[in-house]
Image 1: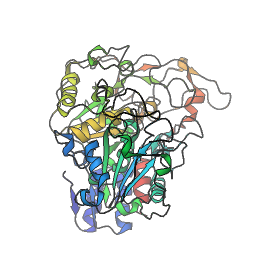
Image 2 (image 1 turned 90 degrees about the horizontal axis):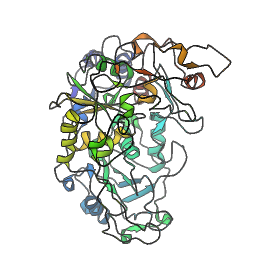
Image 3 (image 1 turned 180 degrees about the vertical axis):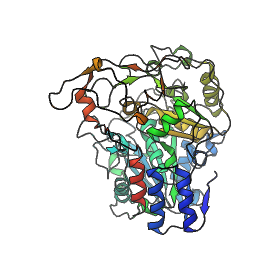
Image 4 (image 1 turned 60 degrees about the horizontal axis):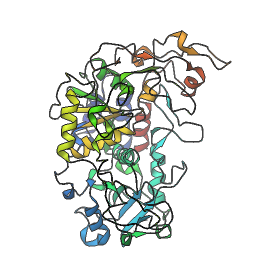
Length: 515
């Protein structure tokens, strides 16, 4: 892994940071001022290529990134003697759910130096749940709320919330090794996003891992504990993301404005930190099928194709977003098919808590995943004629809420070692930013306020900028505008018609780090 360390005088840092973030960017100004105010003398400003790691062909050889049950078992059995080099703290396992349906044999049994915590319900930022690493944020142009006022947001986790989480569980990511794992079922969207969030905030790869496959089926009951065996959160942690102020990994999340620039210019751009050309990948697999060859525009890639209301808003009962389609030039790579969903694993027998025939849902081999990206990505589905991936090229990935992309992102960023960045807000937000929305398609279901679609600044309106197409790749067709788009839904996301940036959350995050 290559990390570019900028060592220079304070003035050189300021100039370098300004240049790195682009002319006139509020992002660059905040970064430079943070460097001055914090008295920092060096900042690791990551490029996309700095944030990817290539897995060994044999996943058993990995000590971080994507790890196997064999590796995790070795650590749990004797952490003191088997911990990876450079790790001085605990092994902390966060399970996305229980192994079975009840309180018995529900989690990996904690041992000396090994803490195990299982996801809880609710949206308390300080507690571990599937929503822990998301919250309502404002990027300067639009808010990214949850489905209702009580379900939490879908945006990036703020520094204050992440600090609460670190301190609740007593985690120090500069000493501990954090493993995200699924008790049973497919939870890569959640645990992948948790891994991604910690990388965004600056936690090093060597301190993070994702279990390949589920705990169920890979750990016998003798190695599992009951609910009462779960580690107790110590509530006494002191770590803060401010201790990572010399690490800037924000390139991992691409802003709306930078995404538009990349897409409208067919992958060419002036965004610092990306390869000179970018491969864009739409990973919104619908009507999932183990046979990748059967996907069509009405069963598999209908969201990509741009059918009427195929994406849907994240607001509960909100109906349609403004437009459908995909980023211009994007290929469709189905997130569902990088995971082996056909092989049943019956190596261990479970009693009533987790009885049954099941799949451990491990990622396919590195060679098979490469074939999906390189073969299907250039010839399959709507991808005919798409250019081949170029070594070192950055992949911009997106889906509806940046959940499905976490599965595809693991396949590129932690297995193939291909630089990857993500449209954090996803199409459910991006598809609301219409600058040319037909008035006849707007349903004024609210009596108060304007009865027309809110004005979106031209530079942030992807449809006006020519960054959207529908149909097959390279069709030349523009976006499909949904009918019956409700004013109450659009109002819920609070579009700022006078916005000058879509990077406000990034600036806020950097300022928090450097307080």
